[in-house]
Image (cartoon, rainbow, N blue to C red):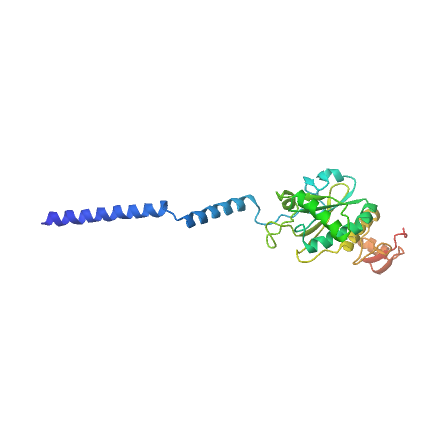
Length: 266
């Protein structure tokens, strides 16, 4: 009797272990169609997150602008095509959208003025070149405004990521409204960021270009809201002797560190 009870208990234990192994194996192998789909989506998301930076990278001022070579609505374009000229590279969220349409008409209005300042315009969005072509034709048809500058096709988002145009807090698949000022030597000199909901000021873009060129040509700074013809700021003194001499140099000085002059004054 003792052996029979013992054998029964041992057999029950073995059966319990077998059942546990069986059901555990089932839970790892058997999967509902919905669960399989969810697991596939999670794997895809993980792959995307590993391929795309979690934070938008930003280029740095006064360093070479990130190189690009891309197809545009005017054919292939690359950064070096603009060597010797200023390049205003700007992004917009999407073609056939109202705010972007007003911006493009604004840039078109200033196009000749930018060219007079040895500057070229180059747009970008995460759209195909065919979308760009259709959109600019629609703008001309509906608004009577011809868009004279090219637009980059950036479906791969390579240029957008290189310039920090994709801001995950706003969108993972559309660029925000960025504007980059690249000088004739290919250096990034200024950048502006606007949200998707608000169009940028094209006169301010042009004003900043004029200010940058004035600073380069005359080794001066420009005050807030400066416009051509207004006084500019003389660089501050770097030594005590320079500070004392500065007040006697004929500038319009409020203090040793705050002096203005007209560009005609040498």
